[in-house]
Amino acid sequence: MPPCCELVADERGGVAGAIGETRSVGKVEMRRTSPRPQKNLHYLIMSGRIVCKFGGSSVADANQFRKIKSILEGNSERRIVVVSAPGKRNVQESKLTDLLYSTYDFAKNGLDFAEPWKLIRSRYIEIANELSLRSNIHEELDKLEELLLEKTQELTVDFVVSRGEYLCAKIMSEFLGARFVDAFPLIQFDSQYKVTAESLQNIADALSDSKSLFVVPGFYGSDMRGNLKTFTRGGSDITGGILANACDALAYENWTDVSGLLMADPRIVKGARSINYVSYREIRELAYSGASVLHDESIAPCRAKNISINIRNTNEPGNQGTIIGPTPLHTSRPITGIAGRKDFSMLYIEKSMMNKERGFGRKVLTILEEHAVSYELSPCGIDSMNVVVDSKSLAKVEEEVRAEIEQKMQPNKIKIFNDVALIATVGHGMVNQIGTAARLFNALANEKINVRIIDQGSSEINIIVGVNEVDFERAIKAIYEEFVEKVVNLE
Ligand code: ASP
Image (cartoon, rainbow, N blue to C red):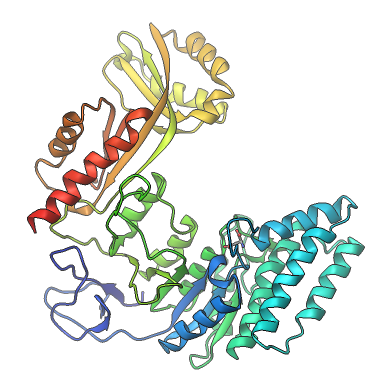
C-alpha cells in the first residue's frame, strides 16, 4: 500500500499543517505519512505525479485550453491529463457528447445527420484553428464522417460518442506537446465491468515515464472481447480515478467549473460556506443524499489506495477547492455538510404482534424488490414498519404493491404517504458528541417543522430526517443555521 495523505484541521475547519515537513498548497497542506501514522511522527514531503481530469466546461473552447496549459505549468507534478469532450459554452448550446448521440441516432436510422455533425465539426476545428494547431483533426473528422455514412459494423453508439473525448485529447496533446495515449486498448473491463488487474498493470507501464506529460481521453475503454465501451454519463471522472490508482498517483485533481463543495445547496442557503476537506465516507453519504460533485464510481479506485481527490475550478485556479481524503477530520464544527432530496414516498404498514412474525420485513422488502422498487430507509416500531422509497418507481406499481402486501402480509393498516423529503446531516464531528441530535431536532422544532422519519446509523456520522416536502428548504436552513452559522459566530 502506498503512503497516505494526512491532513490536519485548523480550528476554522480549514486544513493546515502542524509538525514536520509539509508541502504547502495554499491553505491546504499535505504530508506524506506511513500507512499507519504513529502519534506525533511526521514523515516525508509528498512528491509524485498528479492525475488531472478536466471536465467538459474546462475544454469548451480554445481559451479554456490555454487555462489548462497554465494550470499544468503551475505544478510540474501534474503529469497525467484526462479530458472530457467539450461541453457547453453557454446555456443554449449542447454538449458535444449529446450531439454525438444525436448524430449516431440519425445515422443509424438512415436519416440526414448533417445538422448535429456540422456543429461537432465546427467546434473542434474552431478550437484547433484558434490554437494555431497544424493537427490532422480534419482527417480524423473526415474518417468519422465516412464511417457514419457507411454505417459499418464498427459503428456502435459507444464508439461514436467516445470520439468526443478522443478528438479532444488529440487536440489537447498537440497543444501541450504531450504524449497521446488512447484509453481503448489500455482500460479493459471484465464481464462485471471491473478493470482487470492486467489492465491496471498495462496502464502503469504505458504511463510509467515520470518525465513525460500524457493526455488520455476519458469516458471509455474496452471489454474482454475487444469492443469499445463507454462508462455511464460523466464517466471521464472514472477514467481519472482508474489512472490515479494504476499509477499510484500522489493525488487526483478533478478540474471543473465550481470551486469545490459547499456545506449546503447554495440555492437554498445563500452564501453557503465551502468544504475544505471531506472524508471518503462523508462524501458517500452526501452524494447519496443528493449532493453531486463527481461520478461516484470515481471514488472507489482512489479510496483503494488512499489517494486524495481535489475538486478544483479551472476558472479560479487559485482557489484550493475541496479535498476528499481518507482520514476523518475533526474540527470545532460538528458537521461537514447537509444534503437532501425530495420525491420520496413512505409506506406505513401496521399489524398487531408484527414483532413476533418472523420474516415480516423481509417479505415486504421482497415484494418491493420484485416490483423493481428499491428502498432507502426502513424505520420500524414494535407493530409497525415504514419503508421509504423513491416516489417515481413506486408510482408505476403502487396498486400492485399495495394489493400484494395486503394479500400476503394481512396487515391491519397500510397507508402510502407521498411528498416526503429526506435530509442528511453528515460529519465525523458528530461522533461521540452528546447533544447533537437534540440540537438538530430543537432547530427543526423552533421552525415548527414536523419530523416524520428519524434515522441515525451506529456509525454516527449521519442523521437522516424525513420531513414534508413543503418544509424541505426551511429545514435545511434551520440545520445549517444551528450547526454552521452559530458555530462560526462563536469562533
Ligand atoms: N462526455 C461524457 C458526458 O458528457 C463523459 C464526461 O464528460 O465525463 O457524459
